[in-house]
Image (cartoon, rainbow, N blue to C red; front, top):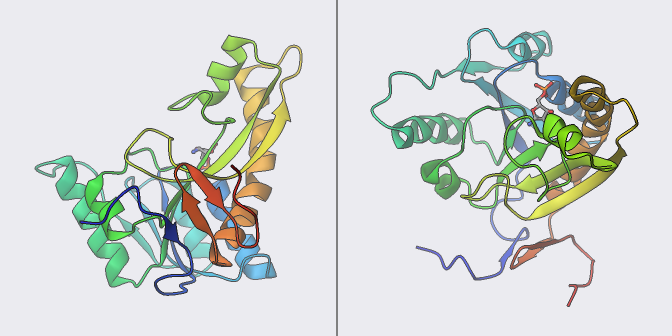
Length: 221
Ligand code: GRF
């Protein structure tokens, strides 16, 4: 068992570039990753797209891009851990290096995190730690904040709580609804996710406590 307090580094392990993308629905962030891999903003290959729902539109996006897809329903398993083990086994068998959550509506459990330590990434539509969990944009509108945004972070055992790789702010405008704010944040998400993954894949980063320190950046005190 590794010491969770020990610093970990992106320079160790395989310098992998094979992504497994996990979705549950529309897949617009998946599309942004497909596009970024195609046009060279992201030097990576999407090895597989997995969904827990057979009707996820993102599966069609993946198929149109020639990316293998796997549907693994979360139903019918004896435990949440058993489902996570099956996810991890599939991703491992496809030699995935990083697992990218893109609207995957399941909490990631210990078996998957253990199989991909510091290699599970999520995008969340708020400036974390504000408004974790579901309906982050509606939470932001209801709270009356003037600024929200998007966060890309490493996944840990908590809810939207892992070290932050990148964030970008988005204004909340008078009259905004959850839908109008979601659309404005989504545009930013589509830029932010490929950019944050590029930072991750460049390697040389470290994690110091909660802080993700990119290659070449001095640690904050
Ligand atoms: C995005 O808002 C993402 O931040 C959140 O779920 C939504 C997924 O949208 N985690 P899409 O399926 O990528 O279009």
